[in-house]
Amino acid sequence: MCVSHWIFNQFKIIFMRKNVKEMKKNRQKSFILWAFVVVILGSCLIACEKYERDVFSELKVVEFGNFAVLAWDMDGFDNEYGVCLSTSQNPTINNAEKVVDGHYNDIFYSSDEEYGYREYYYLSQYGMEGRYYAEVEGLTSQTTYYARAYIKYKETTMYSEQIEFKTSEEPELSLPVLSTLAATSIAASSATLGGNITFVGYPAYTEKGICYSTSQNPTTSNHFVTVSGSGTGNYTTTVSGLSSNTTYYARAYAKNSQGTAYGEQVSFKTQTPTTAQVRIRTDRGYSNISWIGFYDGVTNAIIATYNIEQGAHTSDYFHIPAGNYKLVYYDSNEDKWYYNPNNPSIENYNFQISRKYTVAFLDHNVSPWVYFTVTYDGTF
Image 1: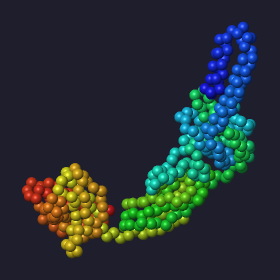
Image 2: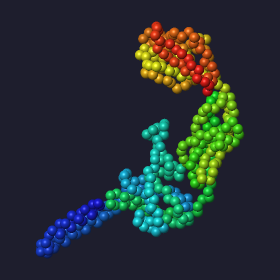
Image 3: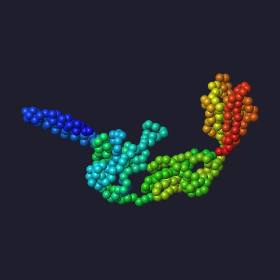
Image 4: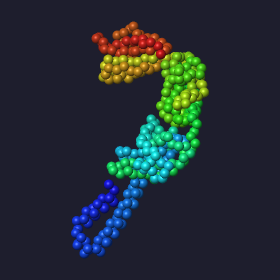
């Protein structure tokens, strides 16, 4: 309830309780009191009107003939809100030709500065900012509309300042426009691919990504990877599971209701592998054993290590240079490392190019109570 309404009700109660005779004796006082009430009510009405206006920021609009997006900021209320539009001025939810629910504009936090940088990603494709938006369809092109944002708070509906805009001629339906970025971070079985969208199309695209193949001019009928996001600008993704020493062709793509648009074709060749992949498995944690390593007897150097996890654990695969290695572990109590305990069969084990292995570090029933095993897991 507005403050002015409450004050009015209080004075109404007071005056109804007084009898007519008493009122006549105090006409002068009553006149002064009523004058005071009028001043207070007027001030409150102005304040209430100003409060309603201050709830909202300026309403902004981007229109496309028969479609418009409106954006605004407002004080946070967990209530019903939206926009109303009409070809007549000062539309309300009761007389407007279009009443459309609003939406909260989701926020994307960048991974580099999670709390320092943010963008409202839905509205960014229209070059707009705001915490709330509404999409209005079915407008008549080349027509003047009046719009107001609204919010329902208890039994009151508050409105923003009115804006006026004229719809343009409806744009032609069109595909997105994009280009394909050159491949980067090319490895034996993976590469980073991407595209750059310069026009979102009409209507705006609903899917974008990369398609690739060992044949030229790949389409989404070949291998493809979708990438999330909207609007214009660059996007990238890493594709994996590629064959080594192989030429691939790639194109960026974007889809809307009119079809699929492609960027120009780029090509790249995956590298010849020089590594093996290994993962480490332990059945439990060890209080005195810190890490497992791979010792190169030719260079007398440990070329890679893996820190032991507490408890049973199997690591992800990681790359090591292919070659012959002794498996070693470091005993932190003795400040020494040891190699191949209790399993001479894997002395100088040959880890071959493009092959995957599981190295298990297990308990043993005789001193030194631990031993290694190596299992071949296939190729990559």
